[in-house]
Structure formats: C-alpha cells, structure tokens
Image 1: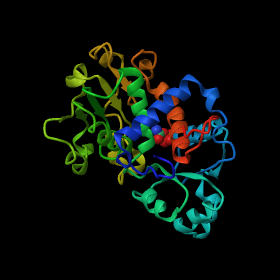
Image 2 (image 1 turned 45 degrees about the vertical axis):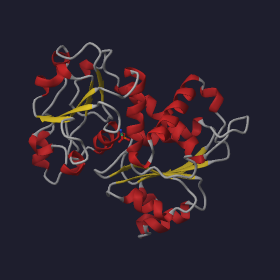
Image 3 (image 1 turned 45 degrees about the horizontal axis):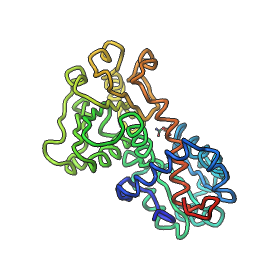
Image 4 (image 1 turned 135 degrees about the vertical axis):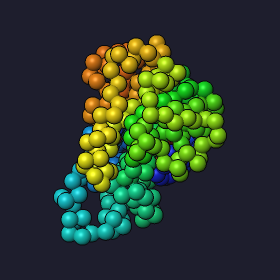
Length: 312
Ligand code: CP
C-alpha cells in the first residue's frame, strides 16, 4: 500500500510496489480520460529550490491531468525562505494547505529531512543535490519497460558524469535489483562512479572504461548524461571535461540495431542533434513517459479512488 508514503529514494519501494506504479502508468497511457478527475479536490505543492524543466512541468501537468490543482514556487526567493524561514517551518506551513508535496533542492539529504516534518503529507524527492532522483528512475523504468519489454538481463551502458549524476545513482541502484542486469560504466577517470554506489553492486556485474567506442556494440541500452556544471568547484575542470563524449551518427553505426539511447535531459553537447531522428533515440518519449509515471505515483501516494470507489 503506497497511500501516505514518501518517495525519497528508489529503494523506499519494493519491486512489487514499483510494478504497481508501472501498471497504473500503462493503464493511464491506454485510457487517460478514465483518470482525468481522480484527484479532483486535491492540491500538489511544487517546491523547486533549483531549476527544472521536465520534472517540474511533468509533475504539474500530471496533477492537472488527474483533475487536481497545484501551488508552489520555482524561485524560493519569492517565498519567505528569502526572509530566513527554515525548511522545517516552510514544510509545516505548506502541509496546512496541500495534500502532497514535491521538492527539489541543491543540498543532498534535504528531501529526507523535510519528510520528517511532514506528518500527513507525502513528500516526493524531485532531486537532492548529487544524491538521488527517484522519479527520474520511475521514468527510466517505464521507458525501458515500453521499449525493451522488461528490465532483466540487459547490458546497460551508463556514460558521462557518473560522479555527480543523481539520475544515474538512482537508476543503477534500482536496476541492480533486477535479474541478470550488467553495467558498463563509461566516464572520464575524474567522473567515475562513486565508491558508495560500486560497493552496493555484486562482483562481476559491472565494468568501468573511458572508451565509449570500444563498448557501444555490446550495449542493449545506452544511458547518456551531461557533465553537471553546477556541481563543479572549478569552471576550468568543467570546461576540460564537458565534451569528453559526443554521441553522433558515426558512433551509432557501431551500436546494435535494437539498442536504445536514453538521456534524462537536459542535453548540452553529449548527443549530437543528428542522432535525434534515429529510431533508437528515445529520450523525448522518455520525457513524456515522465508525466504518465508521475500521474501514477501521485494517484498511488494519495490513495485516490476510481468511480467504483476502489483504490487505484
Ligand atoms: N531530468 C530532469 O531532472 O530534468 P529537469 O532538470 O529539467 O527537471
């Protein structure tokens, strides 16, 4: 039962609970009209302390498409945060007005901290610093399910900024819970996967390389990511590493015919726009699935009912 729960990191939910969200997302995609009023009278608070396009817009679109309403900010300076109000007081106040809240914050651990203050309001982590981004993981799972038929036994290449990429940390933790998944971590030495994530993985299920060309032909899924400028201490170091990988048509020629290219977006230069028309490039469809999976998540956490009074 997901009603009333928080989602701070993907491991907060069992695989059965994740599956129930995916099944509901499938149902919503098949019949969006059938879910267009299930959140009528419910309010989502959208609290973005960091910039966002996909996560914020898809959450807000999700709530509106479920018949609910939204309040919130995308610039905390327009709230009493600018007068020095603490996160705890902000959340306790927002809970007086809202049924569910989604929060993005630049500091790791903030979503977990905030969830301690919310007594009756589910908190959804929309990204906390370089830590986790669990709803991007749900988006990624739905995309893999739709394009590859399931999650087991894939060879997944994860390429780019593996050090700071929170979408990557969440996705790797999640996919490692499925059978037979193998990872190829492709990054510059300076941006390798952190030890704390590697330590969670069984021996033999991953290898590390700096060379995308050498491994692209082995992959079922290639998950590209941008170098996270906002997490670098040195601008010079960012400029040196930002274009380390550029996926282009030439590289795609070496990939399997049914490999898919995913990216949480935003993209900077790491995928040339000439790849966008390749049928294996699924990143904009992935962004669309983000809205459907967030509709399913909101409905589950609120425990709303269908027209037959059954919890959906
Ligand atoms: N994927 C993702 O988190 O994108 P935004 O930063 O635009 O929300």
